[in-house]
Length: 429
RNA sequence: GACCAAGUAGUGUAGUGGCCUAUCAUGCGACCCUGUCACGGUCGCGACUCGGAUUCGAAUUCCGGCUUGGUCGCCA
Image (tube, rainbow, N blue to C red):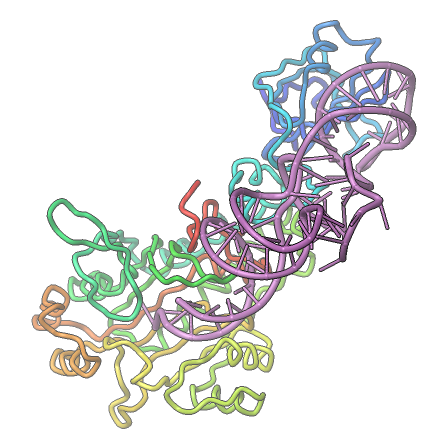
């Protein structure tokens, strides 16, 4: 029976393992093969005079990154990495790797992101790259767990939609038989329709598509969005769910991913404390202006402004009370001062992670806001009908999964947080 | 989309007009080596993004293309 490499200890006596050859060191009469699987790396030691001719022939034929299996006695020795080594009685090459390799899995020689992504199947063999995705997995599991525990129902909404309804971002057009269709930029309108349907609380973790020609370290054209919507709730209720979800995810990773964090060198991983500080939009532009990035009411926050405010805050924080003009039509304005609205952004010191709001559930006001954005209410018929037949007040947010992982692990490039990223120039692999 | 920058062995690099049949590392091949852990040693293999121009001479200068990276914009 095959056993995972991390479970290979002198106590097991005899072990049968399989994996990739990470490195080979031939000292003459003695050869060391470092064999890697999903769980770790084991030294297989071959004293050439003491093994069978078959083992010797296989070792001679072996190349780095070939898949092998071997069986033999496990010995404790302080001379081997991890304090144990396997002396093979049998050793077989299952799949021989060609040479040269398109990139160096053992990371003695670095590779550029483009080379890495062209050969992602090899790049993902690197223990530190693999560790990122172990953590991403844990993170999304924790998010789902927290939301389920708080009575959210997981849903899936369509990614193929009929029209570029909301304005704003560019959409990818799609040939849908004889109709025009697009890849959806956000589950926003569907989540809201489900509030009318009585689901009360929903969440979705799924892809979103944006056809913007940006070319940065923090944008993707296909991203994963963690979206929630909750009924009988205001923006403060939504913010509490958000900060608790994020801190739960950090806590889960801290508790369950110690090995992966060590592999990534994140020895002082900190769980952010809740509640996150809240500042208003007006305070944010004051901080930015004082820090040398002048902004006036109504401006969006520039990249430089986000940086200035992030440095000042030094932790995750919320920006609340945004100008109504700067937010989408479905946002609820304050009753007594309609120039600002019940929207918020959740920021990491490095960048925006999430935005949300209490939504406008009042049909005539919604129509009015659509018109004031220069959009045509007729185009929103399917979205708007639910507001005519009993729509509870509701609030929600969308959180970028890649940005959450990226900032959590202090990754420089958002592409590091996706298995097969889609950016301005890359559609394959 | 604008601006800036860059394309040299499989990978990562050095090289700003002749000293380049191009540096170094890693890799690969051969040989030596029984305790490596970036093993070591000797020898060898393998590259100037494409097209045009300037020049006695171009990896190096100029023009154009292609590709890539980054910044900003844009991105509910």
